[in-house]
Image (cartoon, rainbow, N blue to C red; front, side, top):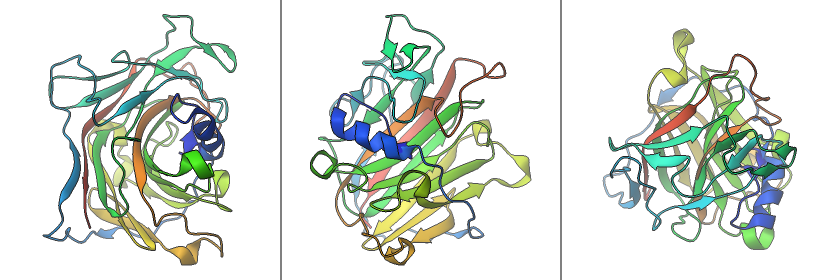
Amino acid sequence: MTVRSSRRRRASLYAASLACCAASLAAIPSDASAAPAPIDSPAKAAAATFTDDFNGAAGSAVDGGKWQIETGDNVNNHERQYYTAGNSNAALDGQGNLVITARKENPNNYQCWYGRCEYTSARLNTSGRFTQAYGHVEARMKVPRGQGMWPAFWMLGNDIGSVGWPASGEIDVMENVGFEPSTVHGTLHGPGYSGSGGIGAAYTLPGGQAFADGFHTFAVDWAPNSVKWSVDGNVYQTRTPADVGGNQWAFNKPFFLILNLAVGGYWPGDPDGSTSFPQQLVVDYVHVTTQ
């Protein structure tokens, strides 16, 4: 995500660092994207390094050996939600999916940057559990719909705790804002090209289809000095050091994964009378392989 630490809200993990990141993450990715092209098949020698198919009993929490759950609000992006712990807003559905639910509620008198929080949701990351440099990173998901919704699948450099954001680098595999139901964004953030200055492109479904109507596969193929984005196997942009305007390319090192559903913020705007709750980001799987 953009201003949020890639949206990077303030989370319990690396609280100070992620808060810093979050501030940059709210930026809106650049527009314009090349016509989609079929993505090359992964190399046969590629090996799975991270796999979560979210199999488990309905209502159970995510695997704590793979994910940690961040808590708190995010003043940097002016998001409205409070990220809760446990399985309150992130739970398996018993049908092989992780469901991250945003609700208009505040059952525990959570306090946000603007006062008493109005919404709850969840944010998960693999920091301390799984990091990798390069490979094929993919998630199959169905996004929520409605004004103010901001789902994201993204990555942060594992050195964020020491170098901060945006020096850590951020790779946004997929972001969607509710007022663009047919469009997703893929973006890079780094030193000199963060926040609204992030480098990226958009992918739009044909014929007015909405991403919330069904599952779609979002991926990056990441190699030294190259990141390539695809939706449902269609490549829509490739970025290299030539794209960062002479600034540092911050993506030749290990990163960790993040899944979250934000509510409101600078980019999507806040929910309004047209927004219904609860809303859900449904994740079928997250798979990472070597390139």
